[in-house]
Amino acid sequence: MTHSQDTGLDPLEVAIRVAKEAGALLMDYLSRPLHTAQKSRRADLVTDADRASEKLIIDRLRAAFPQSTIIGEESGTHCGDPEECWYVDPLDGTTNFTHGYPMFCVSIAYERRGELEAGVIYAPFYDELFCATKGQGATLNGKPLRVSMVEKLGEGLTCTGFHPADFERNGRYFRIMSSHAQAVRRDGSAALDLAAVAAGRFDGFWEFDLHAWDVAAGALIVREAGGRVSAADGAPFEVSGKSILASNGLIHAPMQAVLASMP
Ligand code: IPD
Ligand code: CA
Ligand code: CA
Image (cartoon, rainbow, N blue to C red; front, side):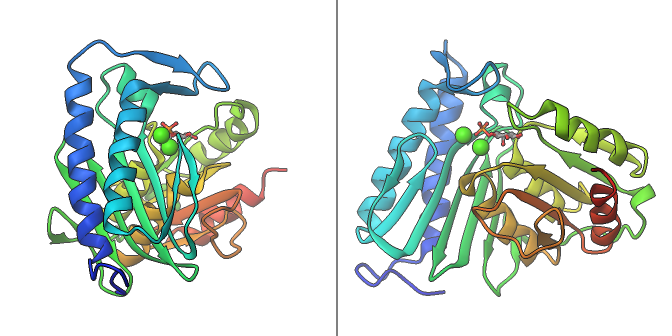
């Protein structure tokens, strides 16, 4: 792990501290009336909690890593060194959050020279902290994480999510995966879906048209927990790519084949 050139700080330690602080802020917002607005569509929401969480995270990251680029969902790109980039989802699972459904989290990832080096996902309702550092494994609340050992797609619990404008296309994938996997879930937080693959709770996950802030931390955590991450067609995963397929590795090829069988 490369520490900040300016401050000597460890990105993972900073991300953990900041994610926990933002998580506490979200829990505080959860207990009071929320101001909610639509972004592009009915199921694409932003609340004052998203904005306050993002401001807190960006202020803290900026103070610790003044030279970095920071890309946040709500405020866009804060320019800095292009070789050192933070991806911030201040509240992943906003629709869940607005209904008090507790599957929501903060997701923060650190990338250096195009390589994801640190990832943190914090689910404050459950007080679950998923972390990974490149090459050093993944943990959940300090305990080592490992993907599941399920070998057959027919015995696998899989998960997906829907872009607010993509119920048709992914609806078809949902249907065909449902007839091959043991079951398919839709839980409403891509970052927590990936964390669940890393923890062996889900055996596989796919989704289309996510953003780097949704997947960067989770992709590293899955890999460091022994899983596999690619694009839906098996091509190498890219944080800003159009799709993601993450699994325990053992059911990756069968999931890919099912997705490929759908025109
Ligand atoms: C959304 C969630 C959801 C996924 C959507 C994302 P947000 O993020 O991760 O699970 O299906 O595509 O946009 O808006 O709650 O941060
Ligand atoms: Ca998100
Ligand atoms: Ca978000």
